[in-house]
Length: 196
Image (tube, rainbow, N blue to C red):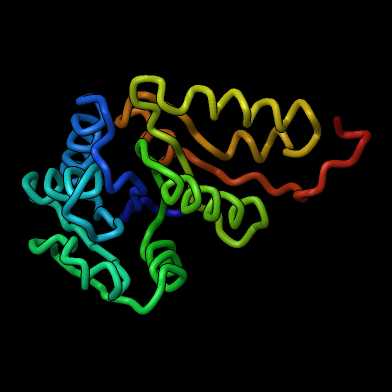
């Protein structure tokens, strides 16, 4: 179990259709800052991304953004961050975000949000890191995904231990508490027929 100093937040560059999503991004950013943690995220000033970063900054926190040059060129980069790293590619962005973080939370978001979280969760499943991963389930946004992940276990494609690696909570404080108590399982990825 490693000390939690920096939390990576993946989330939508769009605001979504419910005010709950923006409110949750703001609450999470503020909470991360008030706990003395550094926020690592994708660097944008728009959507939930901009809201989580601005809330953390307003609460006196440190915020590190990482953005490919192509997106900086589209003028969506946040101008007031503690640090901004401009990288060459999305792959470089994701690697730096992972390297600078001790845990990963996904707020509501689209395809990119899911892809980023699933990649770091896969790395954890394969034993490449032992950092916690979680979903902040705002207004039931991730409830159907959680049911599908349970279905993967039932169908023998994911181990119970690996499914349990992904914390899901609707309370950001409770999610961070689970992160501080997290201990990675040490089991092989492959599910044998006798294990099901």
